[in-house]
Amino acid sequence: MKKRGLLVVISGFAGSGKGTICKELMRQHDNYAFSVSATTRDPRPGEVDGVDYFFITKERFLEMIDAGELLEYAQYVSNYYGTPRTYVEQKLQEGKDVILEIECQGALQVKEMFPEAVLFFVMPPTVQEIYNRLKGRGTESEEVILKRMKRGQEEAEVIGRYDYLLVNDDLDETVRFLHETVNSARYATERNREFVESIKTGFVEFLKEHV
Image (cartoon, rainbow, N blue to C red; front, side):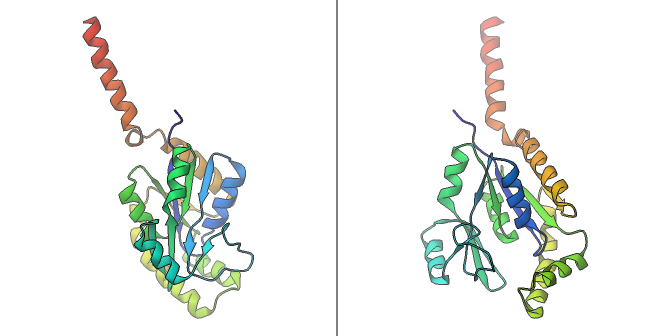
């Protein structure tokens, strides 16, 4: 039987480059499956429905909440974001490591439901760099950028509840560290309780026969 995959949750400040990190990780390694989130926000230039996000109406999103179709959901700068449940469960059962790129509120919801999940928080090296990257996008007004900066201040309060920090100063180095850490995390004792219990039981049965 194929071993169940690991749930990898990636959050970070707006402009931290978390989306780019996820895409590069997927390009370099074939053992990951990316969970496409649903959102009520408008697509940015170049974004494709069903690839970057499922772009849906607020009414449809609320229907999905009521029907229990979302693993987690959160509201961020006047828009909703959420993770469709079925796809995640299917890929984990297939042995794929599933990447969730989601907001802090949703990430902590996932951690409650899946204690074995491993959480990464992505950030640029400085607060000024966060602002510079948001400004450099050229897709949002100064008012929206300042809202994102204010939200970043709030997000900083929960960083300590994540397992690992990713300071995204060099993309290749960040992706390498992420992949190596995921591989190490799958061998943590708390993620292998069933195997540990089987070893303990094996000792009991062995000693019954031989002592």
